[in-house]
Structures are given as structure tokens and as C-alpha cells.
Image (cartoon, rainbow, N blue to C red; front, side, top):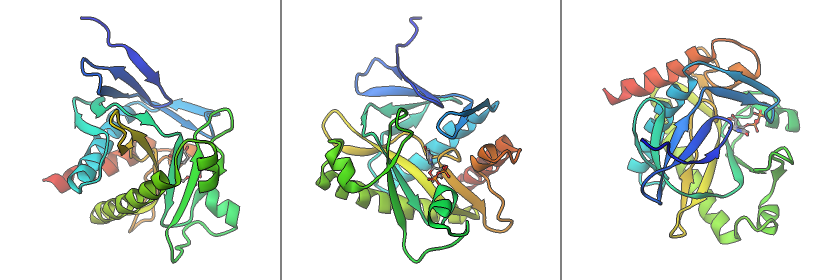
Length: 238
Ligand code: UDP
């Protein structure tokens, strides 16, 4: 059989062409990175866990009527997605203050603000994904103000769906990063992945971190933490 054509290789995933020009195969690798790629490691089985976790989450979002690129999971490491052109912005949603925001604002990690905080970063490895604002994004020519309005409204809805999903498995959704893309017919849809690599997830009872911070901060038991998330999400379906 002919080897499928690799369209793109990222830090944690590969994208392959399929027979359908509008559909890509997304393959999850075991690579873990942090601090703009300075820290790298392989965590055996992480790709399988993230593929399954992201598939469950995107399935829920599809069911809730949020337009996403996700079609279906094929096997342990692969899923089929609609082909999109990624908008080079990372949209970060923060329900609880943690990580870089705690440092920037001099607040304790775990502080719960009365509002939801939205940050945007410009996806650029060369610049180190700088924090930008709406006007910068429009000036860069990557989105219009109208598209940003649409992105923020979709993001608020995604946060509601995810908060209630994680609530049901006794997890606080502290913050998360999402990305959007444009389909060939010009629609904006949620793309990329949502997993413990892209979210901060704290157990409500023990306050234990069950996400990529375990890797960033050398806390150990990274795979085990991702397994807890998958097990609890899978138990919901039963
Ligand atoms: N995040 C991500 N990819 C990035 C940057 C951030 O998935 O390139 C996620 C991160 O896992 C966390 C949230 O976005 O859930 C907020 O991250 P923060 O800005 O606090 O960055 P960090 O503390 O990771 O530097």
C-alpha cells in the first residue's frame, strides 16, 4: 500500500492526506514538549491517551452543536478531521488563575476571578508565541474583527460545555488553549486537540494536577494522570 503523504508535522501530531481532499488523518505521537520546545521527552502511550481523550471531548462539542473539525476516531492513534487552514492564534481561556498569568499579575495560583479571562497568543515559533491583543491580531492580517467576535462567542460556548463535562468527572477546568481553522468553504471551526496537554485539570477533591504541568514541573506520573482523565471520561459513557 502507498504510504500516505505527510502534510504537516507538529510537536505532538502528524497530519496525513486522505483520498478525500477535505479530510485529513491526524496521528498522535508520544512526544511531550514544554517551554517553547526547550524541554522535550517521550511519554510512552501519551499519544493514545490524548487521541482518545480529545475524541471524546470533540464528540461532546459536536453533539452540543459547536462546529469543529472532528469527524471520528479511527484507532488508538488516529482520527479523521475536516481539513482546515489553521488561524495562527492560540485562544486561552482561564476560569482559575494559574501558570504564566499568576506570574504576570502577581496572583496566587488557584485564585478564582469573578470574570472569565481570555488571552490570545500569536502562533509563531520564531517569536515564542507572544501574548497579543485583538488589535494586534487584526493588524497581523490573521483575522478580522468580525471573525474575532465569532471566535470569542464560540469560545465562551466551548468553555460552558467543557466546564460541565469536567464537573461531571470531579475535575476543575482551570484553563485551556484552543485553536480555530477555516474550512475550504470559509467557515470557522474549532480545530487541533483538547487534552491534558492543552488544559489545566485539577481533581476537585485532592486538588491533584492531572495535566501537562506534571511534565513541565517534573512532578512525575504524567501518563498515570492522563489515564485518570481518560478513565473518568470513558466511565461517563457507560
Ligand atoms: N497552553 C497550551 N499551549 C501553549 C500555551 C499554553 O496548550 O503553547 C495551555 C496550557 O496548557 C494551559 C493554558 O494554555 O492549560 C494556559 O497556559 P499559560 O499561559 O499559563 O502558559 P504556561 O503556564 O504553560 O506557560
